[in-house]
Length: 360
Image 1 (tube, one colour):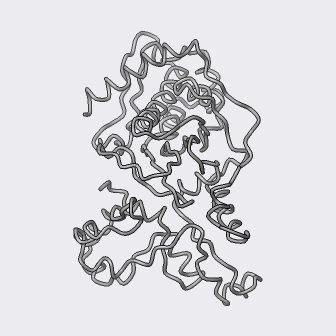
Image 2: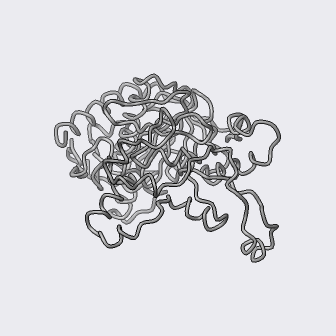
Image 3: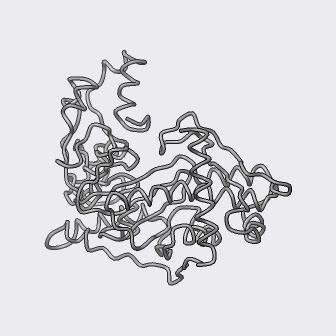
């Protein structure tokens, strides 16, 4: 189980802080604790629960074998599971008075950040995929059945509509471009202008972006590397473009893996801080060969949370409301540049070969 999953954290607590572990009464994810404070109810939604490391995404329940490997008492400490369309009790009177609201206002269950981002980006039907260029990077798409990757590269998450959200997560994305900014002393606008004059593929320069190690592939001891340097390569524009390309290649590997597992990825929506950069949007379109659009609301996870809450107020089937969401998109569409296709195929091949040679 990856270190970021709840299972690993519980085991760490058990091994390194046994006195604290002995006091355990309940185990909640952070937003579940907030819900508990607001409503007094203990519950966990399946989308976020599927990232605990002891959850069966096919049956949508906690996995008994996984729990027993951690501690036989774990089932006693976990809350009940609820669906994404189920209200979690109501707002407690003390908070209602303090905030000027009526007591009993229904509280939506919430979910994981990527599950909420999928809602806010409109990835609620097959074919819509999302790439998030944040501090870490994610690549995910909605699926109508659980996707189990035998290689473990794609996380078998549930989404927040009662379906599934196969997802790849990398540790290094905008942190890589930020490192170039800090190292050169130039701001992102200046670096983007310089990088725009550099040819796709950076003439063979690969920026392997593993500054914090890597989660996917599972290379925790990996480090960042610049390879393929020639005279003149250590220019700010080259470094910045290579950083954007390297971080994108890591996510495109996830896109290819999703497709190999049968996940349909016809539309690509870009979110996260890096999506604000016009050159990065073009790079993503060129590398993936897909047209790129952005949701009108850049904070897709926050919008997803609001949409989930709104669905609780709707008539009829609440799950149908969630699955029928159509979020507004920006009018601008970034189409792939056919002339960059060959250069990026070569650059992606170099990136993969060099990464495996150093770290696999």
